[in-house]
Image (tube, rainbow, N blue to C red; front, top):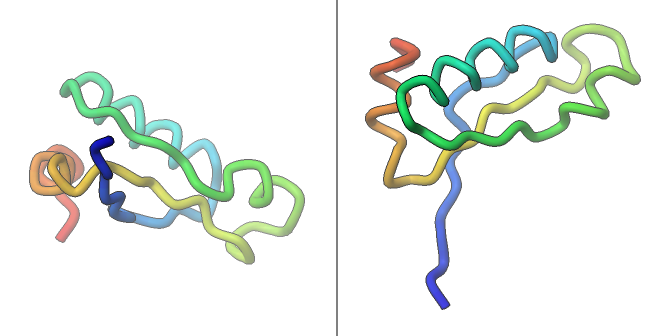
Length: 69
């Protein structure tokens, strides 16, 4: 069994922003997941941020696509 390490690339205040970022990564061939996507919709904006997560192997490419440092 291969264990994969996941990395939070960025946190967003809204689900819409996180979905846009995830689609940008998908267009570049990078699989990404969202953490707290449902919890963030239950509470006011910014209380529980939506986190964009990728595998550690894709971290550098994902940061380049999103221009996140």
